[in-house]
Image (cartoon, rainbow, N blue to C red; front, side, top):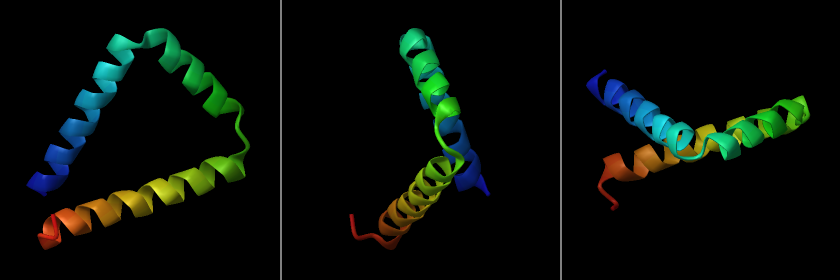
Length: 64
């Protein structure tokens, strides 16, 4: 559970830095994402989730 909370904190920190450093680009990216087809968003979400789980698995298994 502590790893999950640490990961959540890191996600919020990175997101906050992006919003603070590039507000106009972030707004444009969010507007473009809102106009994207639902199926494309679903595919990108699944790919991102699989990539994230894979990265955690590789790091936790000691390969890197």
